[in-house]
Image (tube, rainbow, N blue to C red; front, side):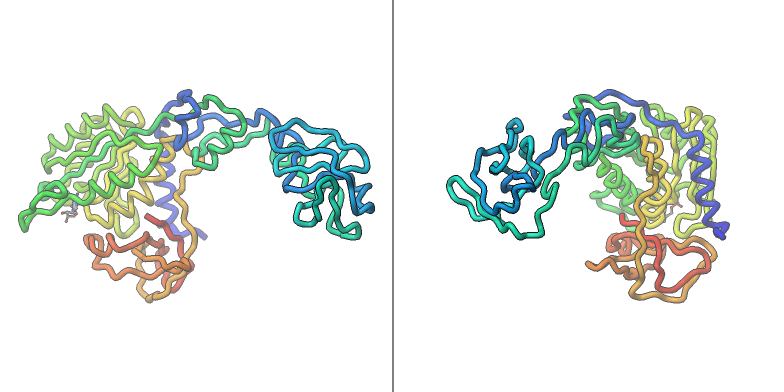
Length: 398
Ligand code: AMP
Ligand code: MG
């Protein structure tokens, strides 16, 4: 049975996703599509391989001639040349990727032969050689018309290999998702500036900026700080929304007297879909939509809360708005080297470091304001309500 707390997280995100706008598609030259999200499937324009080719450097022969143990070399076929014809009782020297000569049905590996100027000698008793040995047959990887990449796929370097191989010149992809960041708080000074003891340097802005800038499908349009004044917060959200598809805010969503984000969103017709989730850190988190269906995520101000809720809640929403078919960020299972018996009746995101073998260690943390533990962590594990022990637990890397 699924725990109600976990259910509430998923159902809240689903409700937010329900009316969320997806960015439109555009046709882009294949030279510029790397890192974008496919809006239509990529189809194979021909079989792969397009004809039978050799998987090895060696000699193309007929298995019927194997018993001879020695064959005259009747030709050479390098990659990129048209298929030759193999005369019975002869061998053709062939290289990896070259077309299999007509009549050949087997390739002998070069290292299994003795090569002379015009003959090749091999073990006629070898059981290794059989029909089709070291031949990549036409269409073995995929057939013309097959879907090579589905709609909603990120065009990674490897996906680009597919686009290139199948002759794509232009692709239909999603426009980059335009995102803005607003950091609220009277106490903030820009990172890199001197700060009085009662001020803090804005760390949430740089956290979110670097998270967004490392995503090839996002365009960061602006990042700004706003003082805790109702009109200023409302104006900055309204103005900011006009040039973006999604807004990430930090601070100002709790129950304090200076927490103006919820009322600011509602003041211009934004709809709050959820406010507060059974999670720690990040409980006050807020998910909303503008009238046009643009995403507005209000992340709580504490730095650990921002990092966790951005990765666990905002990222899947941004991916959805950007046109991904798979919205979840990867979360493999890890076990803890130093488990304890502490539990919560909330979903508990605990900071961990990961060793070279993939084992997790809890990072000693003073809570959601502990920026030192955050900076030293590799990611977090997700512990369901009332659970404890070594796991395995879902792990999300930063
Ligand atoms: P709030 O959610 O606005 O009540 O903020 C919660 C805590 O997070 C407060 O201690 C803030 O000082 C801190 N905080 C808020 N915004 C930032 C920021 N941009 N960078 C670092 N800490 C922040
Ligand atoms: Mg604040």
